[in-house]
Length: 394
Image 1 (tube, helix red, strand yellow):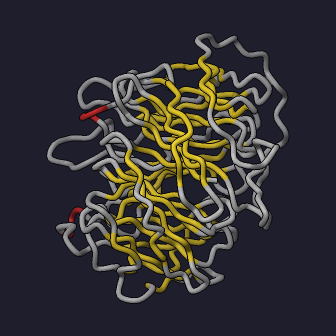
Image 2 (tube, one colour):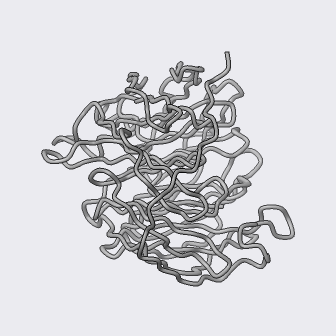
Image 3 (cartoon, one colour):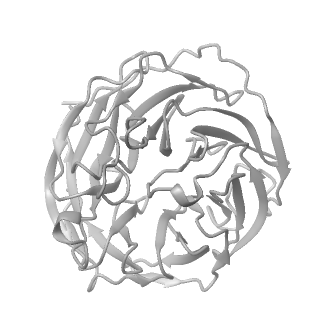
């Protein structure tokens, strides 16, 4: 049976967003700023992270054909970063499907900034309230944008909120009746980290998922024709404390499991699921261990052959081979690459040739993805402000 699909959206008039900021950045050698192809297709592009400082900004790096990075610009978002109150999440930065627009979560003031790529560089075109407290993850499908707000214990619940996106002006308008509270209101001591770490559309854009770390639940929402989500359909995660996830091209979902109830040290794992037409997830490979600590972030190569889990606690990236039906097998002994301490977000380039990782200590490292799934370090660490978070690459 085919999955439900969403019809094309009618563009809804949107309110103007003030506070435009523009900072020029050097372009790659290509004449078209939206085309990262060099002598070989996809050889050049950009990498983005956010400083997460009180005056938040996006750091833009030119990516050369050999994968090396050079800082091109630091562009203020107009919002505030979370600083020391920042929590872990995947998807703090999100690119639109045409790569023209970059969405940024400002944790410190509960807002979302919209940045536009232009021939003159990256510029901030507007900022809106995230619809909650502590926005940690953003996902985009055509002209819909959804944000996950992690909330603050005792004052603001964890929730999701949707926005209509005008891809001509970059304006965001809240979707009426789109806010849904999660099953647990907010992180409660002694829980570690966020109550929920990621929100993401599936490959069709007709289903929306949230990983709840603190409750070991996976939330599923169908998207209605007006852009609102259905009522939450809750499913138990196969393993404890699901953190981040990614879909492969065949609708298999890979989910990292921090496994807090197991003591976390050396207990990390990844589970794969097959997505059914109604959004229900059937377990394929349950809690495949990597014998590392705190696998939080995950990325899958564009061809769907390999997945890479970042183990924050043990400073290791673990590689998994992904079978056609979603079966997982660990590459080697669970150490596909060593990283600097406290590795965080990882992101693959659009062509899958390079992967980058930002660390809590303020470094971005790069790796070349080999044909067998192994990772070759690029030896190009670049410095970013400590506490930088979110990563997008192309």
